[in-house]
Image (cartoon, rainbow, N blue to C red):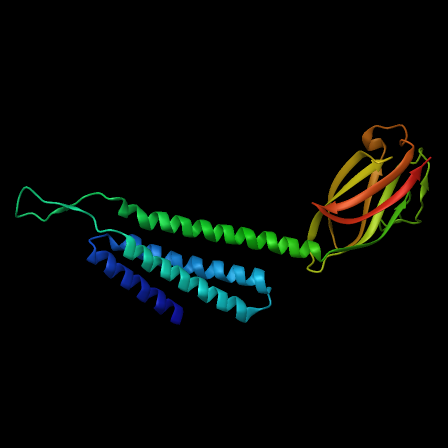
Length: 245
């Protein structure tokens, strides 16, 4: 409630200053409100990124600072905007006409920049949140196998596989602190050279990915030393090595 009153008083004051300069006050009032709201949201986003989502007091403080900064920018713009030049009328009974000046574009331009900063703030927050989630992930107990049970888990880990095997399975335990699902990329190497790459989306729990030779139209797997690496973007999760004979 207090914030609504403050925003209303801000808009009224900016409107009066615009009117005193002979400018249309509505555009500057909208600009002032947008700067306050966008500054508050950007400040809250930065507070969440810097201090963490659970630091509500710090987030509120940063949001308040952002709102005050937005209001300060609104007053600064209002002070810097020149008054429109007036063209004397040929008829002295008529009121002088305002000459078109760039000052009419100022509120729209500033509002656009404010919204752009807000969108950038949301983008930074999203990337930061995703990074935080990814960095807290844990992948453990990697294993290779050629058989899975009824629930899709590898029956018996192996490190040597026949080239005649139909499918090679790679699995590990995947922990995501905040839940949800993540796209995981699996890169398969033979004697150090990239051979296959797969991407699948998995949630928390046991992850099992299948490399099926029939899917690639092969009569048998290439023989050699294999390595499979699981990663999310540039973040390494886990890997396993085995031999195909």
